Amino acid sequence: MSGRLVIIGTGPGNPAQMTPQARTAIAAASDFFGYGPYLDRLDLNDRQTRHASDNREELARARAALAMAASGRHVAVVSGGDAGVFAMAAAVCEAIEHGPAEWRRLDLEIVPGITAMLAVAARVGAPLGHDFCAISLSDNLKPWALIEERLAAAAAAGFVIALYNPISRARPWQLGRAFELLREKLSGQTPVIFGRAAGRPDERISIVRLDEAQPEMADMATCVIVGSQETRMIARDGLSPLVYAPRSAERPMR
Amino acid sequence: MSGRLVIIGTGPGNPAQMTPQARTAIAAASDFFGYGPYLDRLDLNDRQTRHASDNREELARARAALAMAASGRHVAVVSGGDAGVFAMAAAVCEAIEHGPAEWRRLDLEIVPGITAMLAVAARVGAPLGHDFCAISLSDNLKPWALIEERLAAAAAAGFVIALYNPISRARPWQLGRAFELLREKLSGQTPVIFGRAAGRPDERISIVRLDEAQPEMADMATCVIVGSQETRMIARDGLSPLVYAPRSAERPMR
Image 1 (cartoon, each protein chain N blue to C red):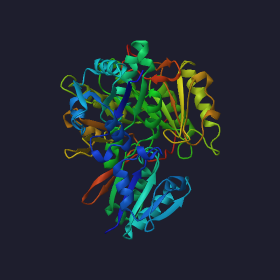
Image 2 (spheres, helix red, strand yellow):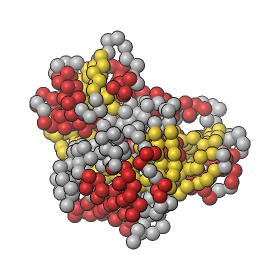
Image 3 (cartoon, rainbow over the protein chains, first blue to last red):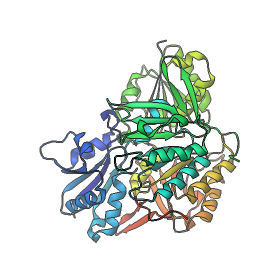
Image 4 (spheres, rainbow over the protein chains, first blue to last red):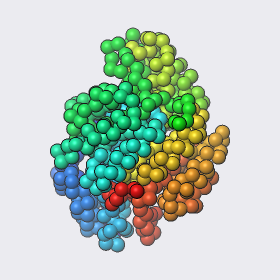
């Protein structure tokens, strides 16, 4: 079988944050599958073909890409950020597990990228400086009760929490409910970072206290980072504050 | 004040995984602070000065870098992986908070990088494909009881767990104790990935079941990823298995 499939994390959308490995992988592929806006960021030539699809069709997209790779093409599946973090790599693995045996024999490569929480964190200091977790707030594929359980467990155990997929037209109330729940577990003073389009020209970063956090501060392109009880904020004259999670913790939680 | 400080995540050590932003930041700086092996990876010129220090002297290194930046130099603090994940960005913020007021006025930039768990995950499939957390097993700066509490909470809530700083000469027993604790919470069949030097010539990746996991399988340069109860393993003839965390969860945890 001569076909190849490469799954590429293109980073947060700033070309300076896309790795040379991703750039090389893009240059080598013939056919590109992905969400339209991610494909729009690529600088493709005339011999390279786009196969754009909607953001909610990940499994169908993965199957189409695998089928084309199995036919002998050199196929790229493109994600923003890192392909392994709430993105296409898991969908491709799922399609392989449940697909024809020949898909398991494909030459498969995965190229990592800068995921959103890292790009956002770098803009404000070091909010992921101690133990942290990443939770997708999308309840399309998991029950909301499980998301609440994970939010509560993470806050109680002192993890900083990065929220992916915080809000969308189809999921308007989940982020507000998450803030409500976190306010029961954490001080209202806890810093919350709304990081939209970090590193891109349309970047918008804001830092508020948990008791001021509102779901309207986020959109689909936002990664929200909620601090722990140990997260610190450093005021700076004429500069935005620095937010960081100290490397040290003085005591057990309880 | 004309000095500048840039904190740079250089990625896992494969030059193809260092971003153009990091490369540009390195080219512009005059003085480099960091752990010797990370500085060794840089291609510095005659006008650029190395200030290498031991890995356990993060706060002293941060202060020295800040003092030099405040004196007007263009200083780079260099981390492997991402500077914000168990690395130098938090130490620099801590030094700023407790240091002289002029340090808060410095021109400070942080450049994100591919952190180890992303590089390891990309080599085996999509083990971070659903909610996950990152925990440092180092108890130099936090009590071991807190680490145990976080491991237990993460496993019970179904997070995939990435373990940073799993073992060292000074911390020989912690990883074995962590596996013991996780075996109480998770099935012995749970996939565990030992990812050493992912993407580098001396890369060594192994995938075992939790009941086979031994601390000797890791060293200082290893990131260990412990799956959740939902993590899947796909056997492939003649190829290493794929490990992934499905995007979907069928039911609440309990």
